[in-house]
Image (cartoon, helix red, strand yellow):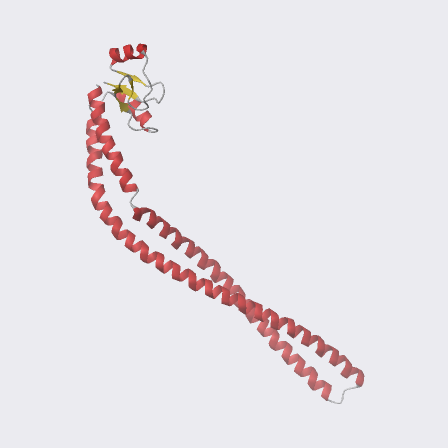
Length: 229
């Protein structure tokens, strides 16, 4: 019974090793990083485009308002030159001064909006540049990943078939116990090393050794592994 489960574990161990190696291929991690950069870049570009549109609309409104103020000031100046009364000229002059104050504020606002547009444009160009670099790196990673896939996957699939075939020869109760422990530790099955557990080196008591001799295996009281002959 133990020979079959040990053979099962040997195949399982080789499979586990290959799967871990395949999972740790550097290009896999790098590919994920590049995909994240591309996703974040796409999201950021959407936000930047919204910001640019908003700033452009604000700029257009401010510019139109600026032109309207200029026309009004010119109209007031002309009216002041057309034989107006002193009171009317004074009133127009005050309005004109108020308009110039508003123009000053508006020019500052236009400068601010223009700076925002420049900042958005610069960031947009930077995001596009980073996204292009990430795409190039991702393409290179995919080539490497294809090579790794050709290297690992055929053997992994072969081992999975061997494991499934060997599973038929293993005692169902023992296999269930093995799979349960396999979730948290490997190897599951270990031998006795100088009277200790081959996994954690915990000493096996005399009474447990009697049980071991009788059943052919015991479960370690410390690490939970199955100790077998």
